[in-house]
Amino acid sequence: MKIRGPTAMTVRSIRLVGGIVLMTYVTGHLTTLGFGLVSLDLLDRLRVSMMSPWQTVPGQVLLYGAIASHLVLGLVAVARRRSPASLNRSDLAQLALGLLIPLFLAGHVLRTRGGIMLDGNHATYGVLMVTYWKKTPFLGLLQVLGLVAAWVHGCLGLYGWLRLRRWWPAVAPFLYPGAFVLPILALLGFVEAGKEALARFADGSLGWSAEVMVALRRMAPQTPILLGWRDRFLFAYAIAAGAALFVFVLQAVRHRRPNGRVIHAGGPEIPAILGLSLLEIDRRQGVPHASACSGRARCGTCRVRVLEGLANLSPPGEAEAVLLQHLQISDPDIRLACQAILLGAMVTIERLVPADAEEEAARDADAAGASTAVAAS
Image 1 (tube, one colour):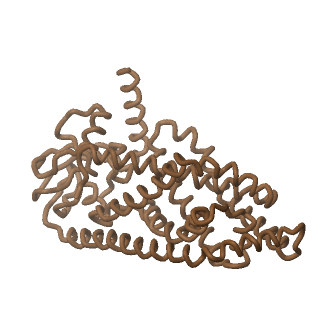
Image 2 (cartoon, rainbow, N blue to C red):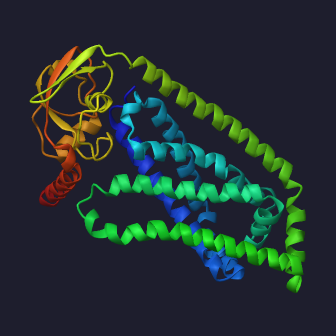
Image 3 (cartoon, one colour):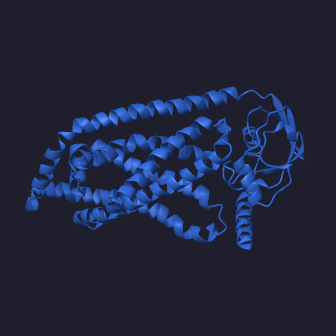
């Protein structure tokens, strides 16, 4: 079922803001870990400054609100998918990583935040490094996989959003190196800090190992409680994710038999499935169709002119109406292929943007919208 009205725009804004908040948090973590290449002591000093904003009440509300909303709305988005044809390779990678992140990071989040809730003590990087490299290395592996998955997932999401902006070609050469270098430096810092922690723990220098052992013994009674929380969360998450995927599969099965036609002006006539968008129908049949935003009603490059059968399409929702207004398009025969659902037996359309020019067209539309906003002000 399509979300229509103001709800659609609200959901989009919540997901975007939540994603930016989480990406900011992950960037801070990776940046801090990179300083493990310098020393373990520097890591712990930076931990205090990096975590302090997130330890305030507003910071925790923002962070955990972003986690909850991003997780819930992400599963809702999976359930709302009508066909695998709506996903390109980048979408598939982002979806898979998004589903895996809670599995990788649930233990770490509950171990750190749960420990604070139970006895008010923050685990130092020294304690975490000894835990991950000596006591429970499997948890360390999950932590690394989780951070990498979160970073790649976030980068894909930001790329899909930012590449439509008119200024993207100018800033992209400066952002691409950082997207690759930051996680590499973080992993190297994690390794070096782990080696230093193990060396200190082994030789007992300056009583450091004794302090770590005291912290580990203090945390030991919490472990069964935290494991119980983790298991209950993972069980609930498995049910929710399984339900979302089950609904998606049902939708895909339901929309597998062609029962309509889409005729392209000057192009092919293809079998179509009622209940799918024009964009999904074209993708399913391998017909090239511009869509720089992957069908999220953000770019307008999938727009088509309906030559016949306009009544056989679903009416525009608010997201489509807002974007068409942004593009200064008032012709009722022009629709966004990603939002126009085929409801009747046949429709004839003309694609208005070549598939190989989608990014340029999206940036031109962004520039036009910005110019309109400036003129209106």
